[in-house]
Image (cartoon, rainbow, N blue to C red):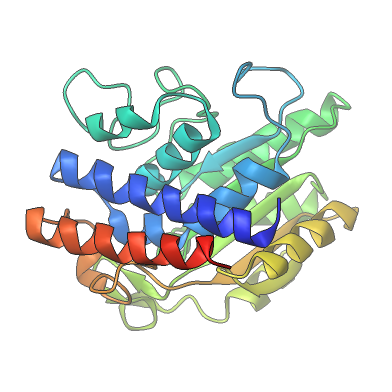
Amino acid sequence: MTNTALKIKANEVRKGIIEGVHAAKAGHPGGSLSAADMFTFLYFEEMNIDPKDPKKANRDRFVLSKGHTAPGLYSALANRGYFPVEDLKTLRHLGSYLQGHPCMQETPGVDMSSGSLGQGISAAVGMALAGKLDNADYRVYTLLGDGEIQEGQVWEASMFAGAKGIDNLVVIVDNNGLQIDGKVEDVCSVYPIADKFKAFNFEVVEIDGHDFDQIRNAMQTARQTKGKPTAIIMKTTKGKGVSFMENQAGWHGKAPNDEEFAIAMADLDKIGASLVEE
């Protein structure tokens, strides 16, 4: 896809995030919005997937390690055709298959249930190792939050992946700089992130997570890297695309009210209109 087409899709993904969280009156918009461009690139360009056959054996796998940003994953899946976009408004509702954290038993396209921070990367490492042992050609991608990597389990999994040279694994860190209690560097600094992954034998690429050329080049580097896993550290803006949510830790885990919803959708409509004119 062209970068403009990807930007238009990402804007639709952001609209779905806002619609879902508003309808649920709960959820996590900030980190969903910051990762929307990566969700879009993975599902519309990078991964070998088929919405009509979500369980096909040779598909690429994705694990949302920061499972609370399920609204972003769900919106990408819906826009990709796994289920109706209208169903995003059932987020967190009783009986909905779109719950607050991803559930592989209920939601088409979800490869691993997640939510307990730190655990998703371990599952992804296991999936990738299984692929290597089976001589399969699928790749495994996992998305972590920068606050999440304060969890020790993240580094146990990384140590194992690096030691075993699991080169079909791509670990993506959404470095938006904010977590529920404030700035990551103030709560419990994880910096320098790149050096930590390098120490565990990862190929490391640092990018602007809102620049599709940089995302594309990073993925190409990951595909070309042999004998070690790849970590993509992407600098992003929490709440990206919604004026009053950007760089605000308070929007980590709360829903917009009706007035805020209208402003957010107007912001995204304006972005969408400008993209159509490109």
